Image 1 (spheres, helix red, strand yellow):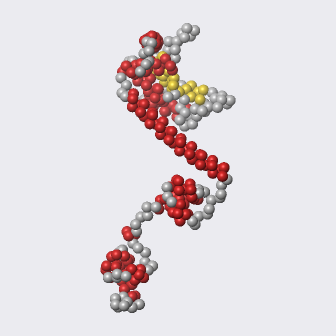
Image 2: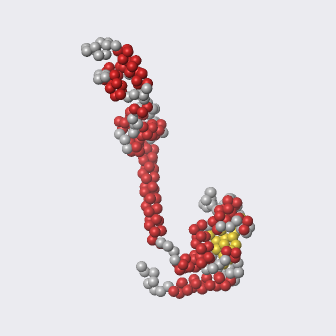
Image 3: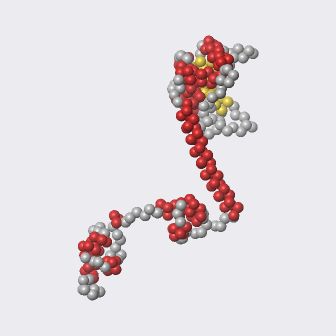
Length: 288
């Protein structure tokens, strides 16, 4: 091929030089400047069949969207659903997935159900976020617990969940049973505030026969900071096949029983503290 000015008369020799430069990793601009080739058509012919070096390739910001669109299309999603999910245009989606098989046309009622389920899942996510914000704000309102705060909390907690003496069954025992690890932590902190020595404490697990007994024993032992061998014999609850239990799964660890030895005097004081709280309530004292 002869150029009007004869600049590119020896095309093959020029191509050999261009290809050699390309294979050393030069860009089109660098080759153009090096060989003084100002005509883009000529430059294209000189480099025909030679791939550009990796460093000259610009990343495509839409590659991830394209891959996701193809994945959703293979799952049977329509253009409308993919557009809502990815926030890109239908024309782009059409270009990306045009080689994929079209999804089977769904019954309109099924499509309505899918749309309703998606809206409900979104609503549940919004509700959960609001729920977590409310809990976090409420937790911040409590602040640091004073000794009196812990004392009053412990008294009320024990009277709600602990063993109590009855006129028909005189048992002045201090025994507490609960399945909530947070409640157990508060209760033990309360006993420590009262000066109850840890040597006076006895622990025992109560759990259904269908639960993970050894796992529950390890969990509660780690929580209270003692070795499993220090626990009393675990109480196994027989499972009633007619009862549908919901406290199952890997998070079911039964209950922990915390007993205090030589505790009659302590029990009487707890009952007295509780009576004092009840008698101390004045009309209107609950108003904020």
